[in-house]
Structures are given as structure tokens and as C-alpha cells.
Image (cartoon, rainbow, N blue to C red; front, side, top):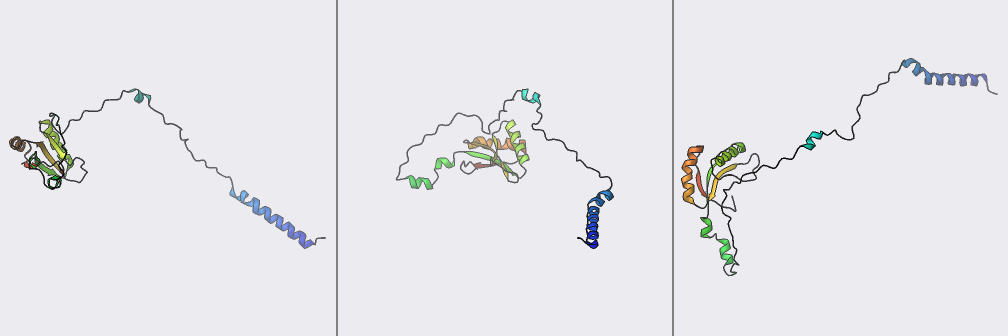
Length: 178
């Protein structure tokens, strides 16, 4: 049989365990339940149907930087193998004097260069911005031409100087290194 001490010890353990289990709930008071407010994410966005009904506009026409001229026909002859190595190292005389450009200036601000090109094009000059794939921070050259007639470009320099205030420089056009 169990002794009186063992009975008291078991009873005390039961009371202590019941106190540990239920007393925190008694002292905690009324519990507040918090629910976060949220919105469900829609499976599909609402689409404005009027946008889908509008017709698609045609792309804008962009003018070429070169004036319209007759197409150039190029014929390639078979090179003579005995003189091919000599001709490849020296430029031909006709090629060096083939075309000319007027360089009006070099600009750091691309917007100023583009404004000057658009002004010149509106006045009928074949102006262009070089290099074509210019990035922000690079230097942009504004050039008029190229043209095969050096005299024609020389006569334009006075008109360009009065129009823009820039004294142009007449240079040979090199299509391999613009």
C-alpha cells in the first residue's frame, strides 16, 4: 500500500500541473484576436475594351538623310591576280577624290546637334549626324553631304555660315571611316 507521504506527493503534483496548465489562461484575461485586412489578387486584370476597338495607326514616314538621286549601279570585275596585292595596299586616285563633306561642328550635347541637323534638313541641305549609332556622352559631328562636286559644297559654305553662324570645314568623305 501507498504511504501517506506518497499520496500527498501525488496530490501535490496533480495540483501543480493543473495550476501550470490552467492558471495562465485565467490571468491572461480576455484574448483579442487580430485579423489582417487583405485583398485577394485577381486572376486577370480588368481590360479597357475601348482600347482594343481603336484602329492601329500607320507608322510615320522618316525622311532619308540623303537626297533622292538616281540609283547607283556598281559592277565588279574579276581582279587580275598579278596586280591585286599592289592595288589593295594603295588607294586608287579616283576613290580619294570621289566625294566631299562639309563638317559644321562637333558637339558634346546630342540634342543641340540633332536640332541643327533638323534645321538644316528643313532648309533643304543633306545634313546628317555622325556617327549614326551615337550614345549619350559621345561627340557628335554635324556634316552636310557627301557630294561628288567640291565646287557645289564650296558654294554652300557661305550660305551655311550665314544660316548657322558656323564656319564649315570642307573635307574628303571616307565611306570606310566616317
